[in-house]
Length: 151
Image (tube, rainbow, N blue to C red; front, side):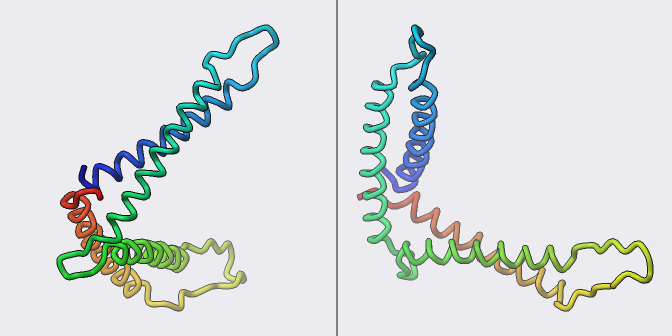
């Protein structure tokens, strides 16, 4: 199995676990004399099996990630860390950008006027540059995911 497939299965298992939690919670209490729509005990067995499968899959993904390196020799775990931090950086910069371009509503000339004190165009260009880098980094990670066998 390729790493990309394992990542997809992990996501599916996580969704399945969330659904099972909801279904169990919906069936643990019934009106006296009634039967639940689903047997909570059977659902708990299925939940347990899904959790064990997820644990094994996460472990195998982590082991594989620790072994993989990009064509330039950078470990996949480093690339993942870079992607996560770059995503946070872009988010923070967009928040700053949005605050800088926010329109001010003044109802009269006597109200206090505010001005933007940063280079909005420069910040926009910087965000765009980081976004390009993020896309390139993500493509490099995806290429590794689709080419590497899960250990």
